[in-house]
Image (tube, rainbow, N blue to C red; front, side):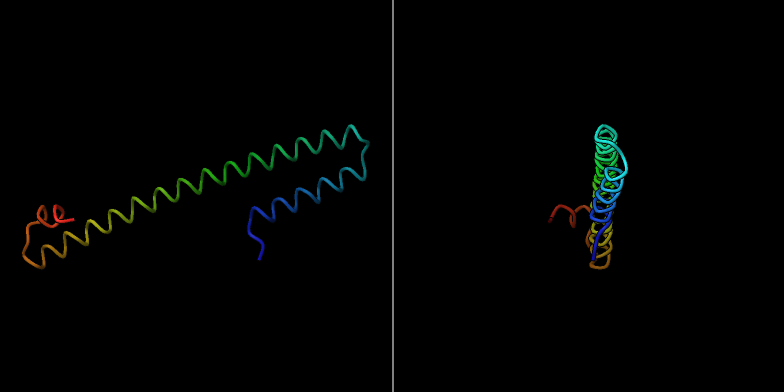
Length: 87
């Protein structure tokens, strides 16, 4: 299955091929440069979103784990500070 970046790259290549077939060499070079720039910008934005989502997921996981430790300590009758200190 093709993921989003692969589809974007294939689409960019198809557009580039279509533009080169119908335009002169100077136009094709200009179109290729703008397409490459657009693909690079979209890829950079996608990577930034991915990194941001990964950081959010790590924060969420740490928060959930902390609550689980506190609840378990409470059920066992331990103070929450002792439970977190034992980790």
